[in-house]
Image (cartoon, rainbow, N blue to C red):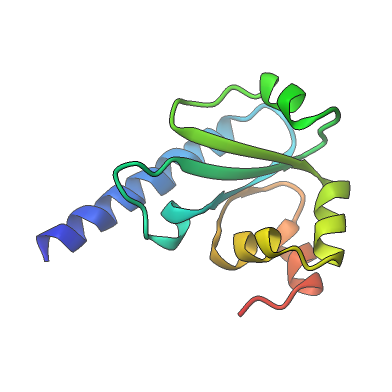
Length: 121
């Protein structure tokens, strides 16, 4: 039981830390913890994956230059137009992100938008 409690404690710490990180962003955005930490199947080598939806322009590399993020974080920056295109196509990455993800911040009400566009089981 100690191992399970330790892993739960570690996961809860990551969730709390990523919520603080998302709250510290100085621009309008919605942020979702995705990947192994959101699902609970993380391991020693797992990074912390965060999908950030914002008013981004330019390519993803240019976007990342303008976002300060801690070591060990993997940021996936999308704008609303890209999110909407992926929703229309029922993109597996987006469906999995909203099914398994943990919303950290939601300035764009993406929870409401996605629940209308995709069936999350």
